[in-house]
Image (cartoon, rainbow, N blue to C red; front, side):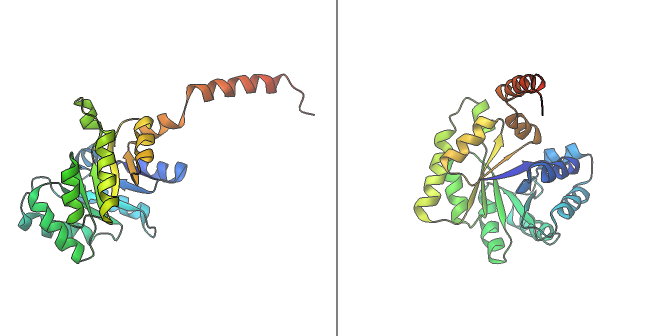
Length: 220
């Protein structure tokens, strides 16, 4: 399973690349706003961080764009900035034709804001490179998400679609493990989610106990 960082803050991305070798980056308008930088400025900075690698960066088309005529040229413009860019399109009906035409041009698409297995199926049919089901939002609304992810993985595998599944809006390490058990290809989460998952109170307790024993034992 691959770990993507859900962020547009370059210092976080640099840290995660060095500390635990994240496999890719996903951005969205909220993350870009949090960076405090103009959209094009920050995505170009992120592109430089992964230049010369196979790591992808998902960058989102203006969410106000809801027609083919608006989405298609913007997607092509963004894709031309970096070969690492994957273009994020919202899961709305006009986007499916855009996905098909971008795929024909060799431009990869991340279909985002997926909240049903049917939406995921149509995005796969349309040639999306990445499928991004959001689980955190659904769980916050009291909805079950394990079956949701399982259905998407099963559909993909049943029909041999090439799309990779990014479980998104991940809030904790348990959700990451669940996604791995269900066969998702990728999870994307904020830096704090990974860091909290790397640490465990029993690990800390064990370190303290062993350190105490170590201090009471001669080295030579």
